[in-house]
Length: 112
Ligand code: FES
Image (cartoon, rainbow, N blue to C red; front, side, top):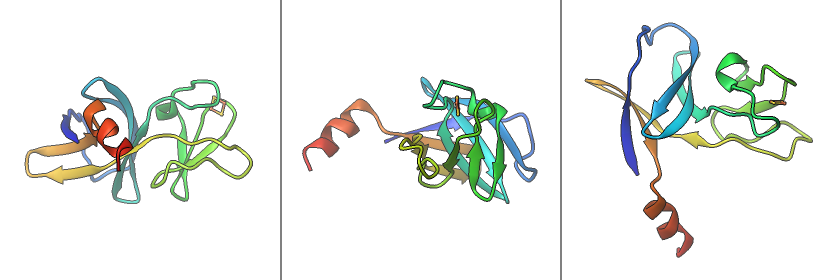
């Protein structure tokens, strides 16, 4: 797993949803109830930008058709049969980091 420092212009003590880059990945970084979550930036339904959505009860709500995804697991709401990627987040002394599996990590996990 490779960790990427995320450039944030806002204070992480306030709630937010914003698009960011973790290496080459477009992610959606969410500060909900004082906890940071990182998920895919695109909705799997019709590719809406999830950073333009909103959060309700640890769910991110897509701005287009209101599909919901769990911020911790990425699992879609009942009947959706889809999911979004989730990424680990660490707050370190020098900033916020998001972990992204490399292709090598994915290949290795295929052999376990
Ligand atoms: S694009 Fe997200 S629910 Fe349709």
